[in-house]
Length: 110
Length: 243
Image (cartoon, rainbow over all chains, first blue to last red; front, side, top):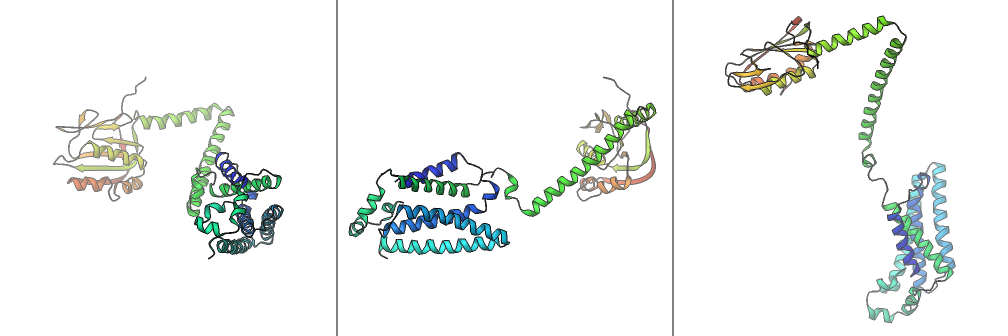
């Protein structure tokens, strides 16, 4: 419940207040979103499998975002920023799909 | 996290051992980890909105193509160059004037006076130019055509223009009447003669472009003829007025 409220409040803040994203942060924004989504789907799957743990979710959420951002930063420094971003997004998207499939199997038994 | 909304049917839900636990998870239980998770979702929502709703969509360049941007930049660069050149010229003029030599000041004033006299038509002008003759026996040329002609000549750099027996100045007017076109109240008779002082080549090119003055006059059924001359003179002047 609190999670949904938090999500809505976050969206509301984003729309109403409209903070300017610093330029150096902008390349990491999409990566951070995908990484966070991966953590959310992972948490959702764990919830379905009745082994959800608050601590693991929080840690995996933060570490996912930080590691993904760090990888992209590293890629930028090595001159392969675009490829690294693509790679990170592909891997995370694969994980999201795998988690979504697991959730689907539990929810719909299909 | 709203699994409840995604469960397809109540019968299916009842069959699920986890549904009770899921509902329990949805309950409002403000504990520290829950608040933390809520905060994380807040951040996620914020990030998503920031990424989707881009600020600054009001800036037109953001969506412009690269070639357009290059074009705009080039235009601005050229304009800046022009303005800088103008600025340098004016700064030099200011220096000269401030240097105190009245001779230069007088020369500059004379130069401007001459330019203004030509512009206002209070002095005779001579120089290279163009003589235009429009033979119009059927009376198809109206005031609009003559106005177009004057404007095209001015655009092409004509310093002074004479239409019929009138000097064309800033307040010259053209009108249609039963006896033909009136220029400043006087009728001009066919063939209508225009004299323009300025660069003959430029003006000639401007008049003979497709759809230009020569074209439109001939389309109406009148005869158009323009001849360049190295020395023409316009001796008609308008009286100086002061107001």
